[in-house]
Image 1 (cartoon, rainbow, N blue to C red):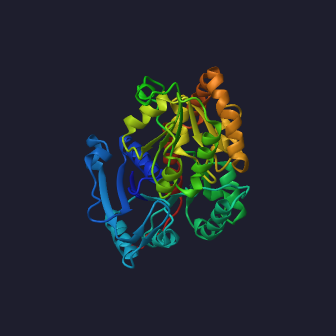
Image 2: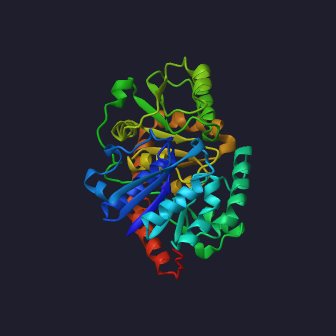
Image 3: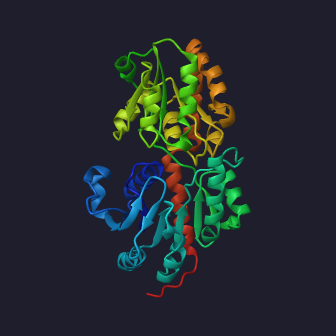
Length: 386
């Protein structure tokens, strides 16, 4: 099967990781993938990004843009025509759009209908269904804007029943919504030896991994950490970068128990950090289903995450500790010392987290379901005007 994947390669975010993992898995299963993405001429493909033995089944098309960030992309006026021409030439069996908050998202159903190719989308947008803050209210508005066009996609992939029900209320037919949670490779992201504690001179290691952006709410974690004044052998590793990095470092950077590790693109290094961590903390105000959380769970780390998006669902029934984003700092002040004084909690929650991933969130199960959706949309009648 030939899949035309419309997604992102840069800047690095969950959407980029999702596209890389899914397209790699499709290539490994013998499918052909054409990757269409917004890029400048300098953002060419490298062989390190995809399996060398499948490169012959890989084709890349770059699309021009006026502006691109981790949040949204603004295409040029000629991008739409270039996309249509590219799809006509590629002749894919199916188009899969990993939606990236772009005006082009709203035109895709019309474009794919014009060329007679079925259209599948993954709707990544984070949310908090309870709308407990300004960020979650803004995301709710974005869902309302997207819903009419999503109703015209052949299938829309979401990560949880909560997200499905939210789109259904906004007018997207339930028959067009498929729940396919994010997945990780449990052999790659697995418990194992690590030297990170020795490197950081830590007896207990707490980790946040993700963007340093307002919606990630990292400052609430840092406030709790400062209030606690845990022993100097307890370290908090902040893995990631983003627009808030300068201000957060300016205010909290002198604390010797906080390790600012910056963005780490090497999976092996990130896995080493997770394998050595005692506790993973995700304090977000909105989420979809965090791949960073699933990676930590798969590595057997005890996980704490806010009950936003589908993260609470991933940790439900004892697989982790679910936090209320409105009471985050106070809850962390209560919970984090317990992990220091009761290390058996770390082991127990880490084992349960790993088991949950194996039961529900493996990449193989994810790809099985994606392939089923492709087969489903290909069975539906279509009209090709080419």
